[in-house]
Image (cartoon, rainbow, N blue to C red; front, top):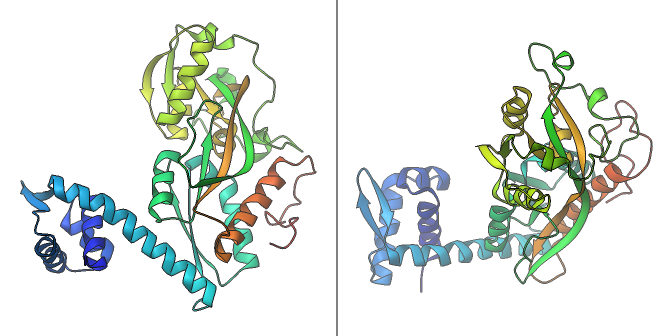
Length: 341
């Protein structure tokens, strides 16, 4: 029988491509990691790693076993966490991953709400784009993944359950008028960025005219993550052209700085502009271009109590963001108007 500790070591080495980094993650010494790898090779009768310059790399057999090891270790960790929560061995821990603009907007409010309502519950948070987030979810490294999908995004794998949180429109972002931005190119203040009473209207809500993207067919374009890039290509294809992509960046601050400097145009979702809005850009909502944001879980219900509490906090804060209600009073914590979760 394969040893779970040695499988965990192999998975860490595969993830980092380095014994040193794997040892650091696992809080082992480097000789200990090497010892576990040697023992695992003896148990399997297969060569799993080989020297490559100053480092190591996995053999074909090593890659195959590491892929399974990642799934096995993740499932064991999930089962341990669920059992601990069920029998009350500890207060509980829940692990969340979310894409950058969610982490920059509503996820902190959900984390704060969860901490107020369940002070003994520990939240682990990582930032990843949807494809990697779903891989982590399936492997059991996280309990909840906040992801986004477009209407034409391929269906998720069987076993993925999606809880709709909110819809997020896309905006055309173009260079602004020179007199709008100061020499520092500072971001707009919250008062400028968020109109009073706005739900998901982090910018001037005026819609762009139909076919507006076509008027920028000869401009340089700036693309983001793979899923965002694919959506941009689809939007432009509907207007009858293929954009000339000159720059690619997942950093919304860098993207807007490039636009403000006249280096191109782009399309960004509302949450990205709510997280950061450069004073030197103009924006207009692109009609019929909305991404849908979900909290994803994996496996059969019911969810463990800690996961259920996190889902409730995310749902509550998302509803508070999108509801047509007056803005929170100064000093009122996010999620304060939610019912007890």
